[in-house]
Length: 189
Image 1: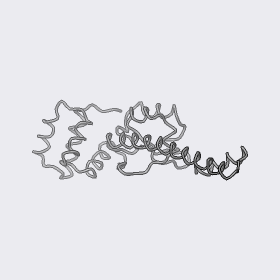
Image 2: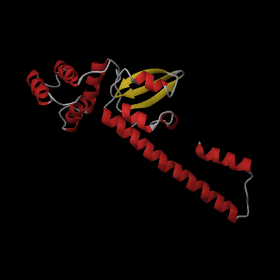
Image 3: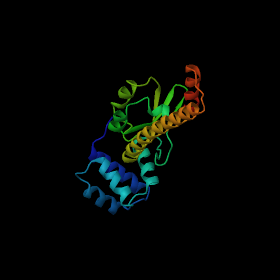
Image 4: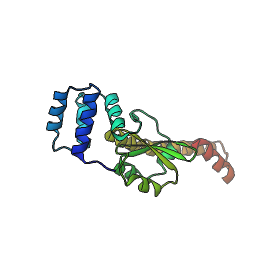
């Protein structure tokens, strides 16, 4: 089930205190300072200001949601997995597919207990889903970066095809339709 921000902030701060990441007094100050904040602002502020490092934040999020955590920052995601979902769906839900194993899809989510995630994902794929937790902004940044890179790569592939076709034309060579299709498949791999 989805959480309310205040409950999330209280419980996450309690995890920091129990793990000796912050003192009990610091935890109280943090809770008061973010009394009216949303959970995403709390997580991002603590990480951005260096109050809680990324590794400890991910560990705490994993403890809160009771699922393993995953740092998406710098991870190279698989093209075919991301393109099973519309970009806006991934961003709106702050999720990103990590890997597929047989009939299971592992998905990193900012809020893995969101009750609407499974039905939403089920509208796009029919895998069994296993969730990991990640930091919302990192997930959304990875989705945006992936889709921007994918658009650039498609343009580069098209440029390569056009250059090759011009070279072949200059040499008086033409590809049959079957040869052209095979050539495009080779480039795409």
